[in-house]
Length: 126
Image (cartoon, rainbow, N blue to C red):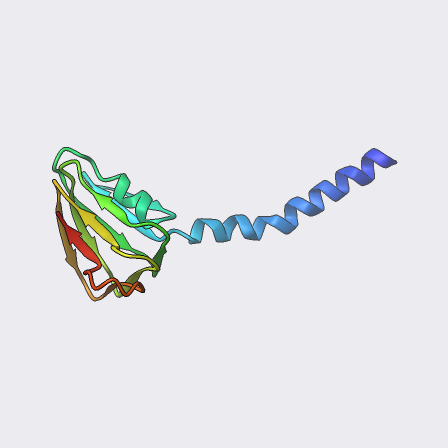
């Protein structure tokens, strides 16, 4: 009887958590399109990291507003086109993007801003 009750409780827990599993899939912030393939990522930093370092022009499209905790470094000969798609990228600290040895193009409507009062621009190219 105990095993039956435990099994029923396990099934009930799985049923309760199924909707949260579906919500997690909807939480993707950006998608990367390269070589005809599109992949979604939970963070903008992960999407930028996925851009190949061989100079291939790669589009990163925002799917929702992105709040970032750390600046995003774009380097290693990456060729990024960031499509804001009507969304914003916000950072609590200084520098949203730091670009060096890479190409970085922003397109679409939206905004990129930082909440720091450091008198620097949110996109810093070295």
